Amino acid sequence: MLCRKTPGLLAVLALMVVSCTSIVGDYNKVNGNTDSGTGTDTDTDADTDTDTDTDSDTDTDSDTDTDTDTGDFDCTETGMWLDPETNLCWESPPASGTGLYDSVIDHCATLGVEWRVPTISELRSIGDGCDRVSWDLEAGVCNDITSCCLVSEVCADTGCWDTALCDGCLPLFGGPGAWGCYTKVGLLGTCTDGFFSTTENSSATEKVWTVSFNSGVVVDRNTTTTNDYQVRCVRDLPPSGTDTDPDPCTPVSAINCGETISSNNADAGSSDGIEVYSCAPYDMTGREIAYSFESPLQAVVDITLESLTADLSLMLLPGQGSTGCDPTACVDGSFNPLLDDESLSFTTAPTVPYTVIVDGHGVVAGDFDLSVSCTQCFDEGEPIIVLPGSPGCCPGLTSISCDGPDTGGNCIPCVGAAICTYCGDSVCGLGENKCNCAADCPP
Image (cartoon, rainbow, N blue to C red; front, side):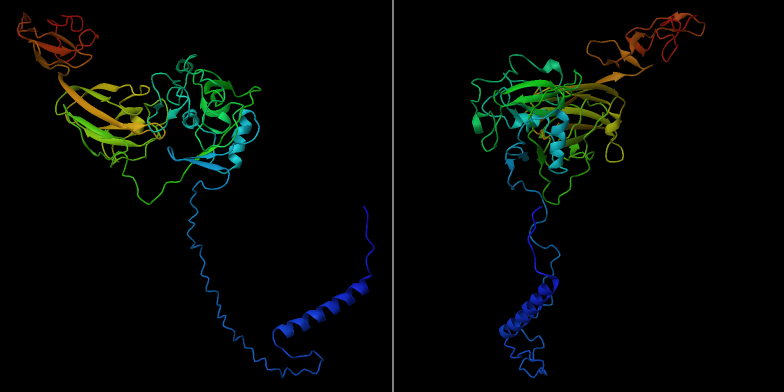
């Protein structure tokens, strides 16, 4: 190391004394203090300064962080882009270079706790210029459902991937985004490599779905080998306002046998409080809307969800209200892909309370028609009239003759009626006897 020769310690101290004396003298001049500093100063100067300056500053800055910045994240900083269609905030441009799957997850974590690797549907939502890859998060379907790749969180297995529909568009780099990427205008960054999502191929091991925005190709890639891909991290905006959702199990109305209700799962009275149902194969993180239902009769009930404008699902829960409705004890559910109708059927006793819920995955919301039809049926041991169009036995029961023994044990025929039973289960149950079900009730 090269060193510069410095003055001795005594010389430095002398210089400091001279400098400080000079500074004091300059200070006095600036403040109008005529004190010459000769040492005979009995402080007879005109400086009656008892701090009479106009600065009555008693720290009137009562700053308790009352500035207008409430700390809410608004996606306006450099390196971010807000998608006005989905309200998702994207890293823009994405991280330079590529990495293995674990490393891109780590990268997003370095941006903050809310940042994450996107799902495949979220990743596809920034696609543009190639209908095969573009995805409408609000509706939960492709932009062109007649000719696009079906891969999403809802349809994440290999069977949802089609060679023709998931192979993207030509020409390469023919999109409207920066550098010809098949991405929305406004997003920065190149797309020479594929981008990871966090959505796993549910029928493969250690593979996640990816998108190559230079072509619009959707394909799965292994997470443990040398597949180096890019990542474009994403985060949600915090909810605005102070309004609180109603209890998710509080119904907006009752739906009755023979009735159809047209609505939207984001309409007034909807909520965002249930994400996991015991009958659902994936989380339902969208808004849900609930309806109460009770049948006045023992009946087979068919519930249908149709005329969909978004990919919605249908769940039937036991009970009603916050103390009864239980998403961990689903009676049944229907989870068909895209805009396919949903339906479920069940048998109920009279006046048993249920909650019917229409829910969406992700941010999916859309219109629907919800219909309920009820067909009366008879339970074990109950008689039915044998006429065309008359109510029959409930599912699982068999109608047998109403023949029965007289007091002497002789079988007496019964005409025009039948009995609903479980004849054949080796139990002599309600309505069964040696005359109409000898298998269960031997003489």
